Length: 144
Image 1 (cartoon, rainbow, N blue to C red):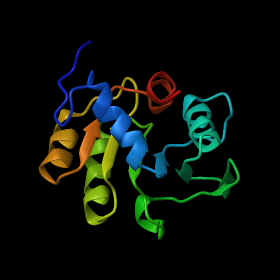
Image 2: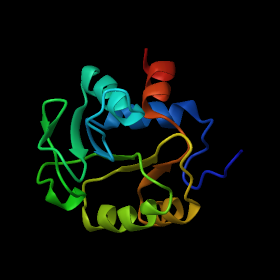
Image 3: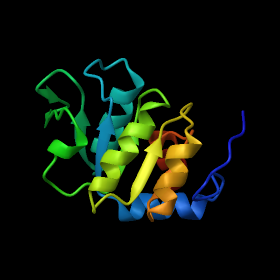
Image 4: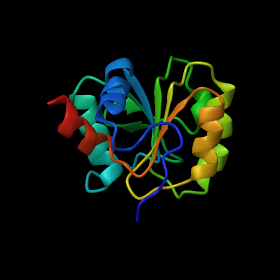
């Protein structure tokens, strides 16, 4: 299913490359401690490629050697990107948390996750939004 991209054309490789170049820290929303889950594989890959990750998960104390947070608001350090592995409707709540912070530049909804309303809201506040794309796949494809 093709979906509209409110802030950048999802086929605009230059814009996605720019995102990876400018972002150094990523809050992973729904980062599972299970190494077989996609969120874990993606987070590990990003971590292995130099990104500082901030796991957000309702349980656990540590995932991938990083302190686990219960919400985005608990992270005191600078966060450049939010990468969401949750149901699409969660994006409506998450974008409100994102907007309370002044440091987040990118709102990324993982492959299979589409929420135009949340992405449009991000755009209206100057935040780049990507949906229905995998950070790992895009990084491998464009930055290798």
